[in-house]
Image (cartoon, rainbow, N blue to C red; front, side, top):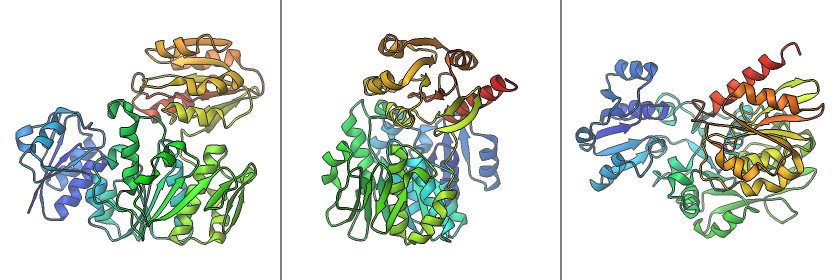
Length: 443
């Protein structure tokens, strides 16, 4: 019987606690924040001891193994103390994978991994596969391993989760792209973040399928990190002999093609996401006929280029999930109509210059929404015809509406984290949609 400590009492942490207890271990959960009532109730119901609002270091360091929440940074004092004691420190993904024989499709990337994960899951589920959805989305992977008997899992995996994966070996591993993100967690060194993402391939073997975007310059530069002898499948935006090719009109596969104009999600970035998902599904055994039948019924998750209203011929788009610069680049590149862009929040070391050409050609006005817009004002203040800053959401929307003409798009695509004014990006997106509905109702 081992002593297992769980750091962090969210969805993944509580799921890991339940699984560890079921394996016969002594379990203690510690959360420095305030545990939600629903999680406190679940832990109490299973008689799992926990603490909320503090970390008792002496008790934590008695552990044989510690399962850590992805939200706790490596440089935090608690992690440094654990490393000093050389205690095994793993993610929920690493821990739960030990206790399932299900096949796993794991998907990571800086942008688009949620869409790719949801579409892959949709294609497998609609094809009749006995499949679960977990990781950085949905219900805890560990809890599903404990309570379900799935044959397949589709997992969205963040770099933070991968940082504490060592033996985790997905059957199909997907890397959609790598662009600078979360650099505050990686000593502001892009290479550290790149190596974190490539950990999804670290245990790949001849039995593994590795899917990646072959046109991504960063992925190509570091592709040698993938073990040799794997089944490598690449996606290209030009006719290249390989696994999948994306043209202006089609996504072409060995098994056939998808007409992009009739696809359920639009934009060049979503063409790549669809290609990755379809490749993953076909590698899992989904038939081409099933993919053609079920692809059109896919509905993406909220807050990702989500249409959320129309007013006097002006369309509103909620892209609150765009928490980094490259996500905004993809968003701006998905439309040809004039855009009024609502941007801003907590800057994560962003380089906004990558947006300059698209802003010049497509953005007619910019509203900076945040408590500190200094960096955005310095960069974009003289680059757009109309520019204001505010820390009030309704004011931001009203200003954008005042600038808009029929045929324009008002888009929330922040490029930043949300924690200055909102609980998270979902809260930001929900409040944007509610405000749009309020301000346009009856107009």
